[in-house]
Image 1 (cartoon, one colour):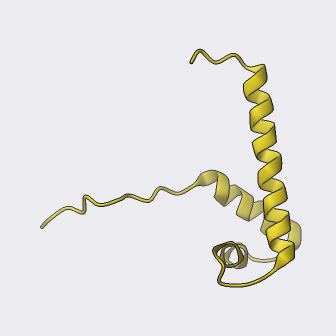
Image 2 (cartoon, helix red, strand yellow; image 1 turned 180 degrees about the horizontal axis):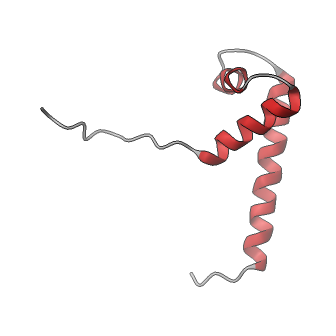
Image 3 (cartoon, rainbow, N blue to C red; image 1 turned 60 degrees about the horizontal axis):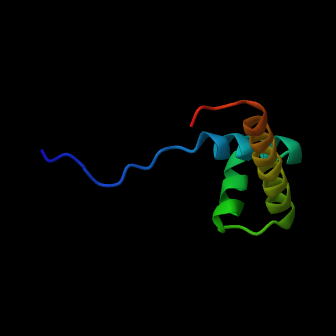
Length: 72
């Protein structure tokens, strides 16, 4: 049997955490949040909350990178 050597899609754990947090804040299912973000459903509030959480996490990550000296 031939092995599948194509593209391997890895799970984005940061996105999954943001989806879960968005669902918890709005009281909806994670599946619904994923459908909205994929474009299968429309809900401006879900998109706004998801994007706000993503931006805050990115900002926090950048600030931590400034504080912690990495030897690159």
